[in-house]
Length: 328
Image 1 (cartoon, rainbow, N blue to C red):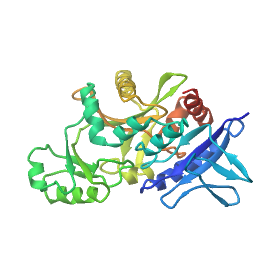
Image 2 (cartoon, one colour):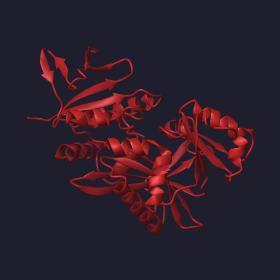
Image 3 (cartoon, one colour):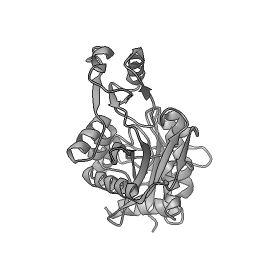
Image 4 (cartoon, one colour):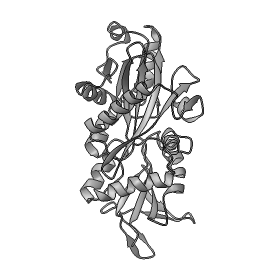
């Protein structure tokens, strides 16, 4: 009998738009010969399964089940495809843990920790992983940008501390009124804002996943933004060149791979994550920027590029993720 898989998409934040882009690709490549797949849309308005005719069925949140033609459908596992809250910050993971339903992403503790950029870099630094200097600002406890600028080396990045997709992110080149404007912009997205010193170098990112208990790094991608930095537009609307596999020396590739594998272990990651780095040639050092525990999966997204560069199909890759979570 085929296992029954819930594929969840949507979300409660502005990143839902990205979730739906990923959903098109994920749904296409989930192996329907191997799994019974039901796409579940999780939104603030409600949780629904929608069939091909557009009929919506409400999810019973008591046990995460649906009723179709008087038959109760329960799920053997969940493929999480939600960027942002509640699929990337641990909320859904905690819910599924209570119901004893396995899922394809990191667990509740890792998801919650890595969703908070400041906590992530603090833990990484303690583990000996190189990170940039940064300052965390809390809404209503923040005095003014002038005081903040005295302790920082410019340029800096200003970004919401929780979340992804580079929404609300700015680069500030000098200590000026720009800093205050950038902080206000980031506070519109989150109650915590991270101000992080800029590291000069090549932007490299790598997907890492676990299959049959083994940690597997994917080929590395180099991101060359056509804008000043890799912002939301560069990520999702083609304002960047992404070279996969990256044209880098073997020593740099080995360094990035080793640091990414170390981070995967330190943070006790599961499923597929994407870890972003800046490689500074002067120091011959890789600085970790962040860990994305639900990376984009649209046709043009970085992880699908890396999967194909490794010689796998997305169907094989998604099957490996589901099998790994079922084995748990």
